[in-house]
Image (cartoon, rainbow, N blue to C red; front, side, top):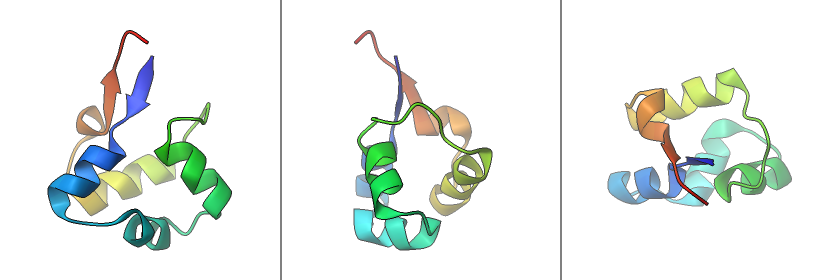
Length: 67
């Protein structure tokens, strides 16, 4: 299973979920699903924005787990 590593990146950069929510401009419901790895898809533009905000690559945004 591929998981989004956003909570770890937020902690590493000293940012809050609220800050990220405001930066992405998504609905709270979709944002919450994305953050909690409950979504089936993520738009490319959101991946790009996350990479720019955290100054990282897509490889750092995602991790593969055996769950």
